[in-house]
Amino acid sequence: MARIIVVTSGKGGVGKTTTSASISTGIAKRGHKTVVIDFDVGLRNLDLIMNCERRVVYDFVNVIQGEASLSQALIRDKRVDTLFILPASQTREKEALTKEGVEKVINELSQTFDYIICDSPAGIEHGAQMALYFADEAIVVTNPEVSSVRDSDRILGILQSKSRRAEKGQDPVKEHLLVTRYNPARVERGEMLSVADVEEILAIPLLGIIPESQVVLNASNQGLPVILETETDAGQAYDDAVARLLGEEREHRFMTAHKKGFFSRMFKGG
Amino acid sequence: MSFLDYFRGKKTNTNTANVAKERLQIIVAHERGHRKQPDYLPALQQELLAVIRKYVDISDDMVQVEIDRTDTCSVLELNVTLPEK
Image: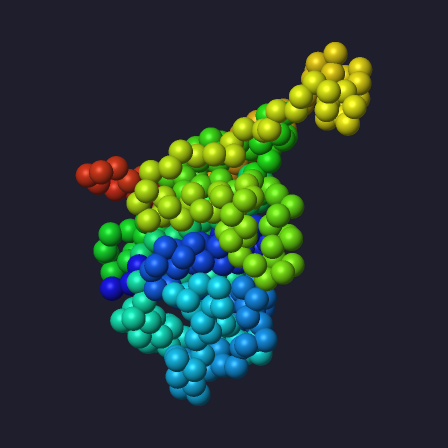
């Protein structure tokens, strides 16, 4: 049985696809057979972030509608050979993702994969609900900012009432908080919600903190999951998150600002 | 921050993060309260309103219906404000 994990947030632009790409790459790198599914029908982007946009032939909706087999649609990652991508359709309506169709695909994937990562579209409509419906666990991606935190709470409510686990009265979906675009210097100046604030409001366990970093844009420019930039803060933060997801204990890092020395403050400004 | 600010210290600090936290705590608590209410509540409220209106002239916002849940039981709380004569 595969572990099915949805990456969700409610709000757009907080880093769901970046997170899906890095988490799935990190899990696969540790030897687990992993597939990452793009649920954002009509606005496909995971392929770009993972640098396989020119290898897309068939997509998720083609598989659901029986126009292609799973093996035809799955794209094997060129860097990590235990990682596969199932791209979203670019042309169809979101309603093409029927519950029965998604279930069929997920059941088939469950037989051969250890991990199924579902990259949710933004919003709380049909596409987002399909992405989270079959999940065993959820990574809730949140920026330390009012609208993102509120939307995360909304999506937690949906996980607790509209997921398959909720509808069937099974154990609830296991929730993980991932705070992204975190700027410790601004937190210290009282300009940004702290991780502790976000944890207190959402009241779910913290999986990781991804610092705001130039590296993330540089990586996505090149179609490189940022976790593979192993020398960088954001890359290491994602690696920590993957390790924790797989049961390892790791202390949280990147919570405090890098202190500037006296001379750099004097000559370069704060 | 300029050269002089370094010696003055960071006194211009308006802590907007605290404002954000307080606002979020209030709105999130409010929205969670609504989330737990059963689907039939709005319809129940409308029907109760119609019944009461047979006898007393009241406006829409004068009937509040809520459900309070504890571990062992749920309480349907009905709050009707009658107009002054």
